Figure 1: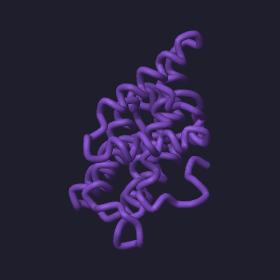
Figure 2: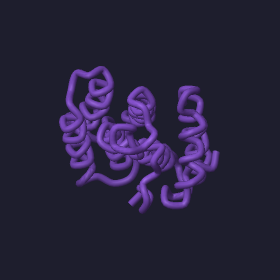
Figure 3: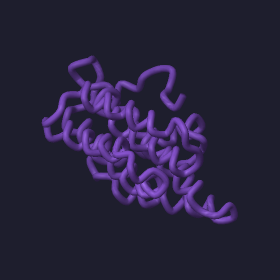
Length: 171
């Protein structure tokens, strides 16, 4: 479980009693999609015939554009995570990253799930002695992609949830 026990109101939309604007929610979803897409080849090299993780990333972006409903994006995320079921290592984590990216439409705080699983995928996709460095590079790449408007929010979220996200955000 990588979500906090108590929901952070900064990741709850204003219409649901939190402080998150729709535009920031969209930025979180786009950033999560970018994180997942960055490691998607680790899944596709293992299961090139399975489109579910790529479709989940596409659904996250389509939700931002208003082309699909939240429930469609959430369902695509579940299907991507289902694609991970019979896998292990980098391919499994990459599929989970894609699934987490799609469900940001439903719960904005899943943005760290996409990022954390992408870091785990990067670590698992490299030789053992290089995994920590690969994880740090992936973490730094993700931070470099953060839009300025949500940068401090995400970095604070990483600090607060690093312990429940396998301590992957130490870059």
